[in-house]
Amino acid sequence: MKIVIVNILIFLLVVGTISCKENTALDYENDPALYFENGTYSQKDSIAHTFFIQPNDQMRDTVFVEILTMGYPIDSDRPFVLEQANAGQPGAAIAGKHFVAFDDPEMLEHLKIPKGSVRKSFPLIVLRDPSLELEEVRIELKIGENEYFRPGIDVWTNFVVKTTAMAVKPTTWDTYWKYTFGPTWGSVKMKFIIDNTGFSDFDGGYLASDYGDYLGSKVQQKLLEYNANPNNPDRPLKEADGTIVTFE
Image 1 (tube, rainbow, N blue to C red):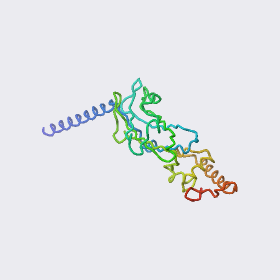
Image 2: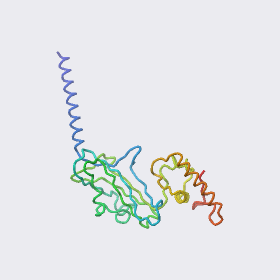
Image 3: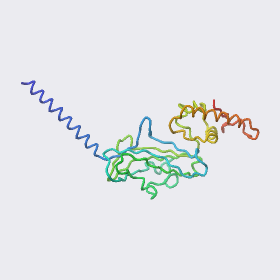
Image 4: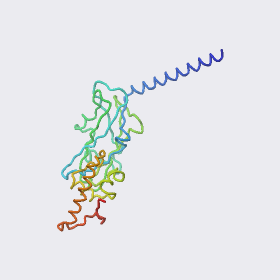
């Protein structure tokens, strides 16, 4: 008899636990919230942008920041709030100077999760201020709260975008691009690659192997031609510190 009673109690405990978990999960799923995408093969916790790879007369550029929702989609657009967490701090980007402010009329239409959707590619518009020729500034984004959304997963409710007009070493140079362009990196070398191949998407996906081989061969040939041309007074091509540019 005692065994039967014990078994019944265990059964009721298990059922109660499952019921509580289901209710908690349901409440969680129906509580609309936002967080920044963070995945192994997608967006991480920051993006480094540079105007260095853009034409000199390009004064604006767009950095897309992926935002995901928690909860169910609905049949209407839902506004959300983005804030700059580091406004006024040293090294912080200035709204209206380094990027289009979030309360600018141009941006209001973008601060919405479209109806029926559970994600948004938010276009952060960065501006080429002359100060970026000598410095890098940070935009520390933070998910705000309104009647439609609250901040979601705590560790993914902050995101950093850095922007400059100086050369920035690609994050995968030492693990990927060195096999195409050689292990050394410098701003002069970077500009030479862009000017002679037209390729600038160093933070995009991996290239087809034959295309990577083509780019590597092309810049090697162009460097040979450059260094052999007596009209180039700085030959052999060097970085500012005197390091000779090579692609081997």
